[in-house]
Image 1 (cartoon, rainbow, N blue to C red):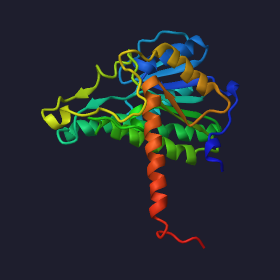
Image 2: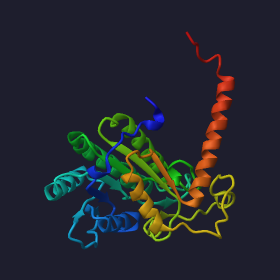
Image 3: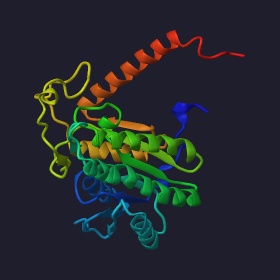
Image 4: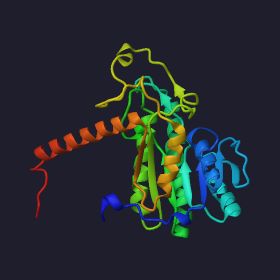
Length: 282
């Protein structure tokens, strides 16, 4: 098995219906609207009814933290459209507080939505995709699911867990489904900050210092990521016959990912130098 080729090929004409979780705002809503313009069927779900009106849309109220809600949402989509070809999870919440000062209840709330919501979607839709011998499971994680940041005990932790879940799915489901982790940088217009949880630190040690670790960082005052073309590129990638495992999108996200990859490579090389008496080659 070639790890780089682990996602199976799929013909573009086999993709007709998308199910979007988190379609009431942000990336989810914009992707749903763009899909409808391209002629797809869309089951648009959210914890509140998405305000999308179109002949090819099925608005659904689905709380991804409840397994039964997800199962009922899929059943409604199948009843309307016959089957679902792509699941896109855009449901999520951000949070900002230091580890030391973090309210445990709020950390658990973030994991409940970001990780357990993805888990409930995966458990439900994998069964559907396996029955159809076809499917694509895509989820918007974050640059912070690969490259951590300050005050990310809940957000980064939950996004790292999502990345691990998607990695396991890529291996387990490769006979019948493709898996895509979408790692965006910061895009204005997603409402992620407005809807997030935050607690300003009262400790001087956490007010000082860097927020992220990155080499060759872009000048943050001189660029902005554009959500409209990003939405189109996400759809374009899912439409590809041969889809990658990861889609990093956004200028600063590439810098942060490259830095994290460089550190992994350095530390892996260091480990290989010192662990030669830790294994035996027969």
